[in-house]
Image (cartoon, rainbow over the protein chains, first blue to last red):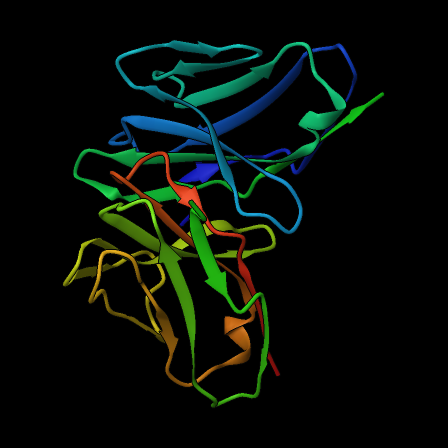
Length: 113
Length: 111
């Protein structure tokens, strides 16, 4: 039962353009969402998060948007850089058990120079 | 400050063998967890701990045991390895459950 879904296994964009990575969730109890970035042969690293009381959170080139009614969030990277090429995981937790973090399957982003 | 360390990096086991994956952190984090990553599945939580002496099951705990005798260490034990446990295993720690710091992973193959 995949409660967090990333339906695009891969995305390719040109350097300098916007990258938009999407994530959908089914559990309406989720109230905190995170994005992690993973390079090959390394562990994931935390990128940005958003609480359900907000609809947008920005950190430099990275912005996460949350649409609670659609149970959808997205990560925007502007401008995209070749060093952003990695696998991006969306994750979510609920207040009933914020120790139980559910991850999506990941989207592999390739930024072409 | 080494962060989260995991040993070994690679391991090959035969079906039925047991082994322990080691995880240690030097950030004095209370929360530690183990995940497995499989193609098309993302990361799935196996077990977690909210402090020394306290552990609980995650989404996929069967076939694995954990203990937390110190704040620093959180070993994962495979009792009787099965081919279905072939995966990449990540340990993570954090001061709370969110925004976790992950180790580099252990790639396990069970034949």
